[in-house]
Image 1 (cartoon, rainbow, N blue to C red):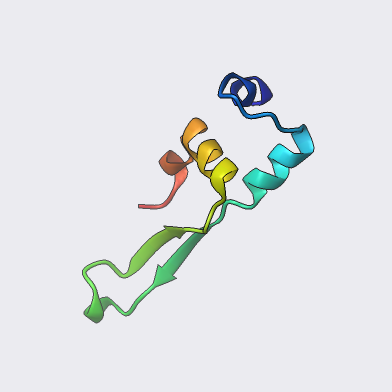
Image 2 (spheres, rainbow, N blue to C red):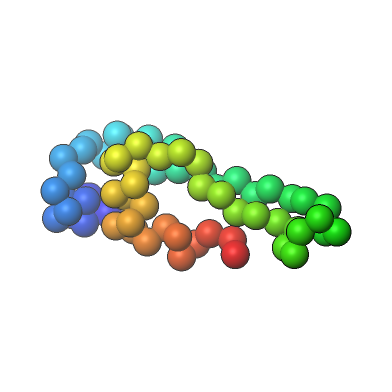
Length: 66
């Protein structure tokens, strides 16, 4: 992971990388079925610039709920 981060121009320590990745959260909102087509909605927590880069580098969107 560190190699991939450095290849993408991010200078960060292992501990800081861990903290940034830990801060990326997926929130699943559950609604009453009658009000929406889908009873759930997946939303990613607000991220800073480094977290956005990490999100894209590691393709985290592939692991989120539909």
